Length: 203
Image (tube, rainbow, N blue to C red; front, side, top):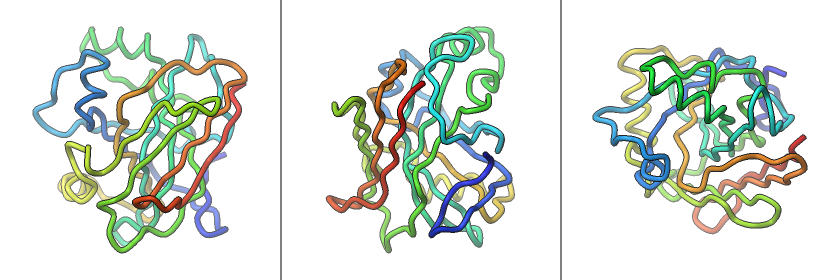
């Protein structure tokens, strides 16, 4: 699987661009340092999946995110996304000053709900992630260090954004380990209005 759904049509990105450490409380919960500039890393298209795994060489962790689809150099659609992480491996790589790709870019490391057209204003976008009907993550644009438009400006300084590309904007506090048979339900809201929801059962 290398595509996502937008208005009933399949979109295949050329790349998935991820923003790391974009919520203060998430930085604090992992004991990371506050970055001096925006943290950017990529996932390949091969990371996209509709199957949620709990284990791949090691236990996997979830990170819920607000994700945008690019069209014409701008955000055109929004979805809920799961950034799946090999946390133990990421910690080892980070401590050695090495890139994160082995912990972030593996097959099955990116899951997305259906993309829907963005509202006129994206300032009130927020996410909620429930695991086994218990809320684990809540957060939105108001809590981001780098707001979506700032992210777009920064990315355009050094990389070409092609139609269909996806931008994952970072995760709020509440990340954790995935357990087999866990039921994940992630929703994007515009204020109190639900825009799109994705559900996955972990294997």
